[in-house]
Image 1 (cartoon, rainbow, N blue to C red):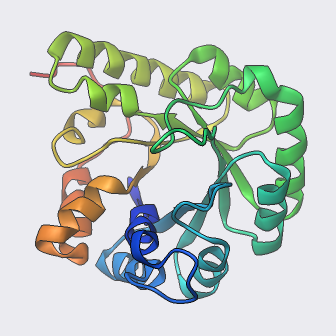
Image 2 (image 1 turned 90 degrees about the vertical axis):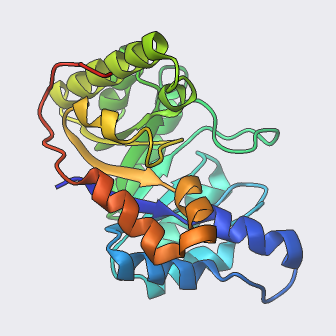
Length: 254
C-alpha cells in the first residue's frame, strides 16, 4: 500500500506570519498533525530549517510526543540540526539541501559532492535508531551515491515533473526519469519515497513510477484545507493514491 506523509510546515508558516517570536500562536501545527492522522495519514513530515521560518524547535519536540504514526524529520546536514535529530529521535530523518533565499526546498541533495560528510551523519543517525532518507533528484549517479553512503531510503524530488505537468512532452520525459530513478534505487537496495509539488491533478500519472512506499505532500493539502477542511483534504489525496500497484508500467499518459 502506498502511504501518505503529510507535511505540516505551512501550518506553521501561517502561525509565524502573525506570532513569530511569541510563546503561543495559531494555527497549531501539532493539532493539524493529529487531524491528519485522524483522517488516515500514515505519517507526519516537518522540516526544521536553520532559519526557523516555519517549524520551530518546540514543534519538533511536541510532535515526537503527540503523534502516533511516523515522524519524518526533514533536515539539513548542519551540526546544530543533526544534534537536535539525535536528541528527538524521529522515526526517519530526511536530509535535504537548504538555501536561505529559497521559498521551499528546490532541487535535490548533492550526494556525490558531500559523500564523506553525509556518510558520517548517516552513521550517527542509524546508531541512534533513526532511519535515513536522502532527498535527491531523479539522477542515477546521485542515487548510486545515496546507496554508497548508507542511506536506507531516497525521496525522489518530483518538483520538475510537477512544474511541467501541463506540457505533455516535458512531463513524459520527467516521468521517464522518475521511473528510471526508482528502478535504479530499487536495484541498489534503496527504499523509494517521493514528493514535492504533488497534488490531486498530477498525482494519478505518478502511478507509473514503480517501487514507491510513501509520498510526502504538504502545500497542496494545506491549501485545499482552506476550502474543504484539513481532514477532507487529506482524504481526497488518499483516494487519488488508491490503486497504486508499485510495479513498472508502460508510460501511456494522455
